[in-house]
Image 1: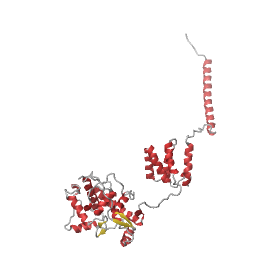
Image 2: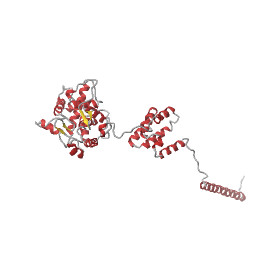
Image 3: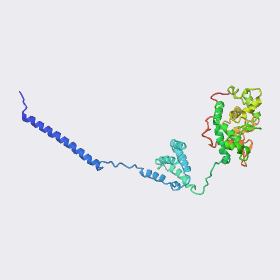
Amino acid sequence: MIFSIKPFDISNRIKYLLVGVTVIFALIGFFLTVSFFAIKLHITNDSGAADVNDRYFQDIKDKYSNSDSKNIFQVTNREALFFHQVLVLNKYYPENSHSILNAYLKGHNLEDGERMVEAVNLHMQNNTSYTSEILEFENQKFIDGFQRNSGSVFGWMNISEWADLKIAVSKDKHLIDSVANLTNVEPRLIVAVLIGEQIRLFNSDREAYKRWIAPLKMLSVESVYSLGVTGIKAATAQTIERNLKDRNSVFYLGSKYENLLDLSTQYIDNERYKRLTDFNNHFYSYLYAALNLKQLKVQWERAGFPIDNRPEILATLYNIGFESSFPKANPVVGGSTMFIHETPYSFGAVAFEYYYSGELFDLFPFKKVKFDWSNGSI
């Protein structure tokens, strides 16, 4: 059977197709028009959802917009409160506590530190134990009546001469570091005995201080009874030299150190004196001091009484000399008594206070190991 398509059927199909296409484009146009007006009239805007803690964030904003610190925390010492909060947080979330403290110590921005604490407090609002400990600070009588002191708790660091001495010491950092690398003695420990020796010489009543030391911010070089900037006596210097070579000595450090202080001329007394009293180069003053400390450390260690972490004892022994160094369980801090603006201090105490004061810490930080034997041992 043969089928045929009538002309009428073809025209109808074309007509329906054109109508369908027209309707589709009309719908698209209508949708676009409606969308355009919806956007223009902000009908499609999503109002969003407010964070459940929005009020908390607003409170923080208001708190730090107020420049009156008393109205902010009801205490005058914001920094003390900050450290209190960090300390409390450390009991609950040490990781967060360490991160906040580290950021503050590096940035020194108290408000940023406070905001970091606020971010944590947002998640600690329901921890009654935590919040009560935080409030303990504000409940104490710190609002009024407590005394804040200017300067340092270490009285001798409040004298004007101390500022000059710090500048003078900083000028010799390269020499001190060089000696430390050579002897493996912590630089800050070397500086501790240097401070003990120099602070008594930085006396505004001394003519030398007025004429040279203060104006030039230079260390005082001794040249009579004690020698150099670290106050090494000639007899002590000779003992240090002998100890380096005497393999049977309790002060012996090992073959690596035997030739560190070798003298090159036949006039050894004169050569030793010149190297220790050189006004322009204090290298040997620091080298003798470092080796002195290390020899004392080794003596006590061999006797079973390690004093690596006792700068006050090492300084005391450094000051009183090898002949008075007798290892024992309970050594006494002391040494010669010096008067700083009429206040008495012992050599060992001054060295101890400097060592743990934080002063000059950027230049001479703590080392994990005070006496490093990694590059040579006894």
